[in-house]
Amino acid sequence: MARIRKAAAILVPLALSASLVAFAGPAESKLPQESPIDVVHPRLDTHAAKLNISYGRSDLDLHYDQKDAAEPNGCNVRHHEESEKAEVKSGNPHIRLGSDATDWKLLQFHFHTPSEHKFAGHSYPLELHLVHENVSTKQLAVIGVPLKVGAASTVDTVLAKLAPECGDNVHLSQIDLNTLLPHDKSTLRYMGSLTTFPYSEGVRWFLMGEKTVTQATITRFQQMFPHGNSREVQPLNGRVVTAVPHI
Image 1: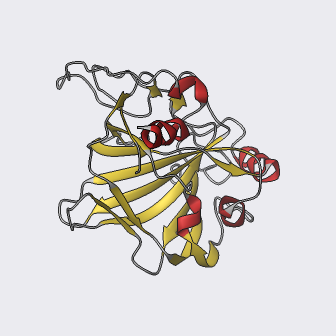
Image 2 (image 1 turned 135 degrees about the vertical axis):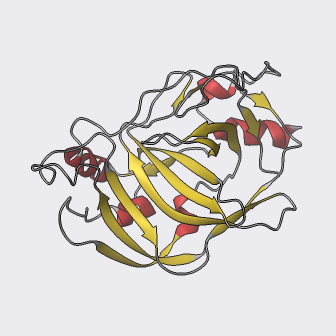
């Protein structure tokens, strides 16, 4: 039990982890199930399928994910759904759920400022989203990692040179993708959607504990997106968020 409580505490700031309750509510299937959300009162679940992560090293191409290419001034205007996106170019990084042998392949990861998800009303300066696709069903799963100011990390390496909106990609060789994630793989889980158009639902979300990034990198990214590139939090509409310790 002590290990379970310790794992749950790493999931989110102390203000949230202290509010873990055995809460359950009816799912409202006819109401929108969109992302991001403000996570409050997650339900502890020690029996959910374990999230197995097999990332390793990969070459990446960092590019500017442009949404307004058809606009005459698209290269000079920051659209609120644009971001810096790193596409996986080598290796076979993937996740699996429990004993299911089906791979969810990591396609790309990108960043939002400020964090799209909130935790008991608390937001972070950056949030990392790692997007996976089930190789059989094509369903999407996203791992979200809130980023706070602190020691340098792999995120600093990835965002050391930002790709321009209308310019060349930035190639990164053999990045250890495992180091993008916190050591503790406990997760907050819920069903949601993409946070950019077309906001498709049916996305499995796994929110992890925080990682650090230097202030210099946060400033560099925020200067690229001075008005932010995050969607506002969406109503839960009866959904339950589960806190799953990684034991």
